[in-house]
Structures are given as structure tokens and as C-alpha cells.
Amino acid sequence: MQQTFESYRNALNNHDIEKALSFLAENFKLVFIDFDMTMTKEQVVDVLGWDAGANGKVTHGELQIFENTIASIFSEQNDFLKLIDIPELKAKITYEFGEDGLIEQQLYEALPNQPSFEKRMRPAVEWAMVHRKEELAVIYPNNQMVFNEEMARRWVALLQEWHTATSRKNYQ
Image (cartoon, rainbow, N blue to C red; front, side, top):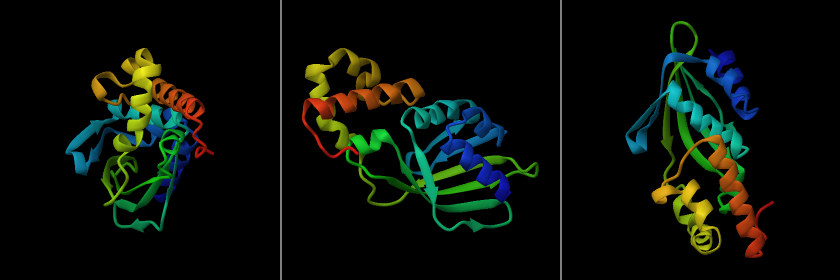
């Protein structure tokens, strides 16, 4: 179980989507507890693509290992978050493993007092409404995020352009 978990985390951080998917059971579910939303294995492909497109990295604290679960506090960093002044987002994530050793369920619970990326990206969106309206319409239709690899790359490019145009110095 722990070896599968570590292999899965390495595949995610290396943005090897196909390999990451190989550690998920066919009936895999990703459950966002705070948003009452569940995604299937097929739907998770776009989320993994977003992480790749935004150059995401995930680290974790001490693992809590039980019979068929591994849980910890995870920290996510990526270029999108950095560009909107969020150094990291933290969540408690629990992985549940099936008898075949594959991950059957991932429970995602945001920690309290995490920064709102919608609020932090508002100045960039306001700038883009004036300077890059057509691009914004594609990557932020009806003020909704579209989570896939292409949109992540386009968001990062737009945010970098915003930084340059407004002389923002905070992105490293």
C-alpha cells in the first residue's frame, strides 16, 4: 500500500498522467468534501492535466497509515498559485486502497483559512477584461475555471503577461 502510494505521488509530481492513472482502481472516486463533489477516474484525467500544465508539486507531512488508508496534510504548489500570490494550498487527503492494492478513493478536505484563489486572481481578471478579453473568454467562460492541461498553460501565460504589464515583482 505505501509503495503504491509513493509511486502514485512520484508519478503525479513528474506529471506522468498515464502512470498515475495506473495506480487508480477502475471504480476510483475523488471526493471533494467541502464542495460535495465527486469525480470518477475518467474525470480526474483533466485535473491531473491541470497539475501538469501549471507545473504542480505536492508534498505531504507525516503519513498516518491504517488498515487500508493513508492520510496526511498535503501542500500543493504550482505556477498558477504563485502568480496570484498564493504560496501553497493545504488539505487533508485520505487515500483508501482496495484489496487489489489500487487506490479506490481519495477524500480531499481543504484546511480552514486557506486563501481563495478566486479572490486572489480578481486583479488579473479585471486587467484581462480590458487587455486580453478574448483569451479570458476562452479560459474563464462565464467566470468559471476549466481544469485541464491546456487551460492551465494558458492561465499561466496570461498571468505572466499580467505580471509583466503591471510590473508585478512577486513571482519567482
